Amino acid sequence: MLRFVDFKGARFSATLLVPLSLKPVFNAAKNGQDLHPVVTEFVNQLGFDSFTCAFSTTPRPDRNAQLYVFTTLAREWTQRYDEEAYVEIDPRIQLVNERSSILIWNGQDFYGRSDRLDQFLRDAARHGLRSSACFTLHDVNHNGVMISYNSRKTHLEPQVIERNLGTLYAFGTHFHDEFMRLIVRKGLPSRLQGATLTKREIEVLRMVARGHTSDDIGIKLAITPRTVKFHMDSVRAKMCAANRQEAVALAVKAGLFDVLP
Image (cartoon, rainbow, N blue to C red; front, side):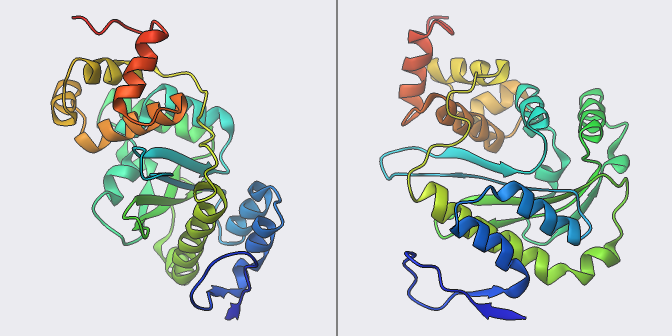
């Protein structure tokens, strides 16, 4: 069932149609409440344990993209994910990179492919992430957005996903729109701002300082240029840097590395 929702203060050119089941989440957002408990309750009703929405976007025309992440997973996991540069091997990202359809990822199916991937899977399982239903979407600014419904179960049944397919798509899309409206479009900084750069991010930034392109860096580190961009988006968000050049300047000033070989 759809219900007409009036977003006071929002500038919409037409009436926004939102499923009635999403009303509690939108009310919490409109009233400035913490979204974690209400989002967790909602995804629990759908048979999942946690939710993640991650994307890079440009808050202002004069700035390069920065990374924004909302997740109900424990902060310990997000810190671990960041420190270990798990974005480089996260199967969910690889699976949905070129698709918009919802895909099921069962971690147990990926064991044995590499030592580092096995480490990711064990780490993820310890933090309640053993399987996911995930997809990507593109917002009005053509930013890639990953939506992931996560579970402690080792295996997700396709029938469960199929029964809630429309709701999963609707929630991911509307949540991202609301997150963009409340956070990004108001110019609020990423929660990553001020966080310590990881070893991998410093390594990537050092290569940027020495004139390497994303393609060059990707080849040297055996990662994709898209992943290199993700690292740089994270760097700029943490350093509150407008572009790569400013990030390099701030890193050199902080003594993280010398630009000379």
